[in-house]
Length: 87
Image (cartoon, rainbow, N blue to C red; front, side, top):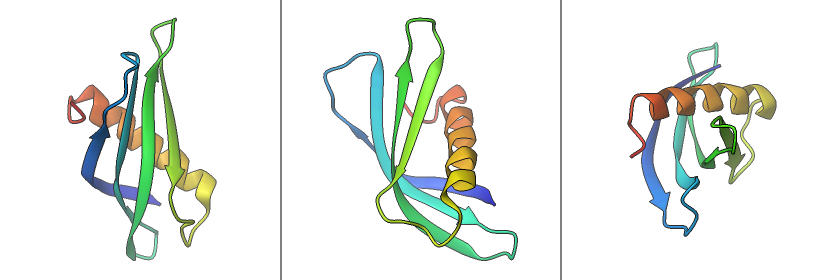
C-alpha cells in the first residue's frame, strides 16, 4: 500500500502552540492498482525532546488493513511536514 496524496487538508484552530490538528482525504493505492479515498484526522505534536509525534485516525474504517495504512500515512505526513506543505 502507498499513499498517493492527502488532499483537502484543513487545519483546525486549537489553542496549543505545540500541537497541530488537521483533517483531510487520503488517496491510497493498494498493490492491485486500485485507488481509494479515506477521510482521516491527524495531528502533529512536538514533544519536550524536540521530536514529532504523529497520530492518525480514520473517520470510517477502510477496506484494507488499518495498521499498515496508518504507518504509511504517518511516513507521508512526516515528509509533507518536512517539506513545509502543512503550514
